[in-house]
Image (cartoon, rainbow, N blue to C red; front, side):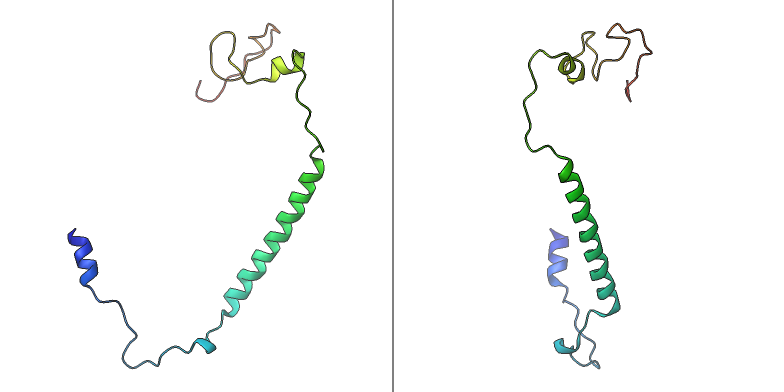
Length: 105
């Protein structure tokens, strides 16, 4: 509470006594403002092109997956038969490959 009282009691900074007031019509963004604007415009153009390219790859409709298919049972991130977390490894599904380890496990 004392910090709030101290902040309320301190006067706000003012312009030095010998300086003229700032004229709003003479303030310009300058070179830094121009460069920032150009960088922002370039970023918007690049991101717009990237978004358009990615949206062209999206299929027009999304069909629901067929129930009981082989690919759905192996790619679903559900619980593993051995009770461990994460995706099933090659060794867990009986294929005999090397077991994959997940980070932290």
